Image 1: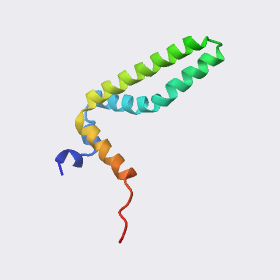
Image 2: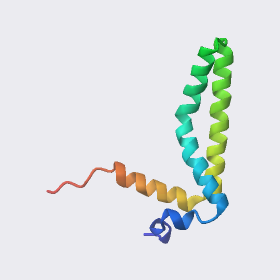
Image 3: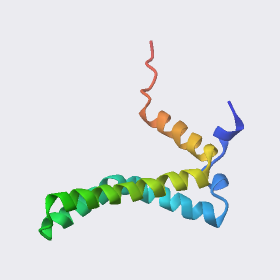
Image 4: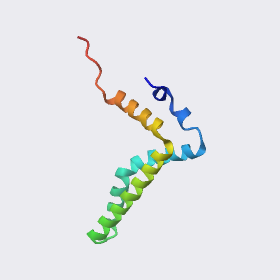
Length: 98
């Protein structure tokens, strides 16, 4: 195993810029679903034409993704690997006792 996977989150997010990037990473992952739903609901409530609502939802989603990838670039590969390993542990089925 590489030493990168053994590092914890606190060691990887050690500067103010990385802390801001981590907050942006978490918020944009939530925003992947919340931004289109919120903008779509707002457009419908305000009576915007469908084309305008779809355009604004698309722009909002694109901005969200740009911020997400920017935060990933700042956080770097070790953090992405740490998250990947943790997700595999969560979703990987437990070995059966045979």
